[in-house]
Image 1 (cartoon, rainbow, N blue to C red):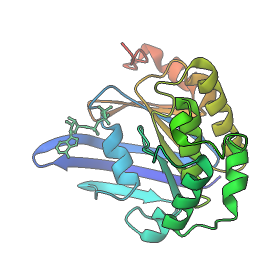
Image 2: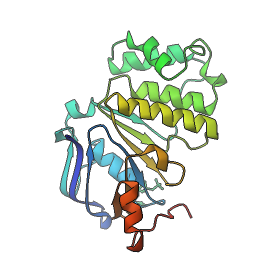
Image 3: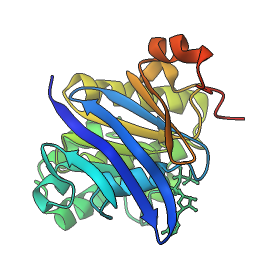
Length: 230
Ligand code: ATP
C-alpha cells in the first residue's frame, strides 16, 4: 500500500507562536482519515501544509510522492472548503461547467459527476433552490473535477440533516472504494466514526492519538481524550 500523505516531525510557527509540534502521521492510499481537534488544534494549518499554501517551519511534508508546493502535486488534490460558495443564479450544470473551464478540466465529465453525486434531476435548477446537502454534493462534484487522487474535505457535514449526512458519507465511501484517498477535518469524532478507516486527533498542536478506531479505544487508558466534542 503506498503512502499518499506523510508528515514527519513537522513543526509550524506563525511568528513566534508554535502551532504544530513534531507532527508525524501517514495517510495510505485508499484510506479515509479523520483529522479531529477542537478550535485552534491545528487542523487548518495541517490542511494548508498539505495544499502547499504554507511551508512547514521544520520537518517533512510529502504529498503524493512529491513536495506539497509542487503545482503537479496540487493538481491532484481536490478540496472541499467548509463553506463552499456558489453563484446562486446559476444552475448546478452551469456551475460545474464554469468550474470545469476555470480548472481546465475535461468538460465531458460534468454530466457524469452530477450523476455520481445524485444531482442529475436537479442539474437544471438554480443553486439557490438547493438544500445544504445538495450544495455540499455539488461542492464534492467540483472538488472531483480534476479527478484527484487525494480529497480534502473540511467539515463536510456541518449543517446537514442526518439523512443528507448519511448520503454524503455513503458517497465519500464510494469514492474511497474507487481508489481515492480522503481526509475529513472535523471538530467531532462521534457520528463520523463509522465512515473512517483511521483517525488523527490533534490537541493544541500536538498529536494526541493516531490509528484505527480499535487502536484508539485500546489506547483509551492513555492520554487519549476521544471526547473532543465537549
Ligand atoms: P478551527 O477548527 O477553529 O479552524 P484549527 O484546528 O483549524 O481550528 P488552526 O486554524 O490551524 O486550528 O489554528 C492553530 C493555531 O494557529 C491557533 O492558535 C490559531 O489562532 C493560530 N493561527 C492560525 N492561523 C494563523 C495565522 N495566519 N497567523 C497567526 N496565527 C494563526
